[in-house]
Image 1 (cartoon, rainbow, N blue to C red):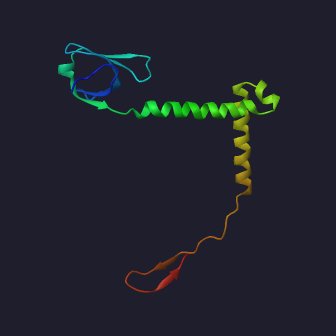
Image 2: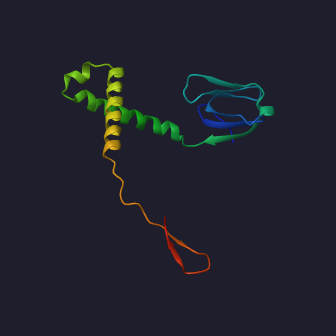
Image 3: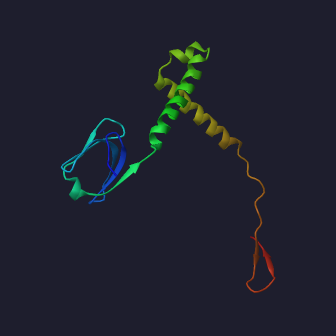
Length: 137
């Protein structure tokens, strides 16, 4: 199979390192992969010696999941921005996070205060090889 530019591949090297990215160039002398976050390049100087096997990913799951996550976040942001409370829009993200943490602490305190134990369970113990029961202590 001929490896082409912009294919998503996973390469396993001799030293058990696993490199994943899209192909920028592939030759006998050098392999250049673009990382998944597209912020860096992976260069393998001696691919014939170093690469043990190459896995060609036909359908990239990570690339599909990312737009879904972005869409979900943008929907949540849109809901927050549509709220009519002017005070929420003016506050900074740090302040909002502090408010969320404070609310979580209050909820946990209430759960601890309101927690009530039910009746303790009574366990019956059996003597091995008999039908004699002894109630739990």
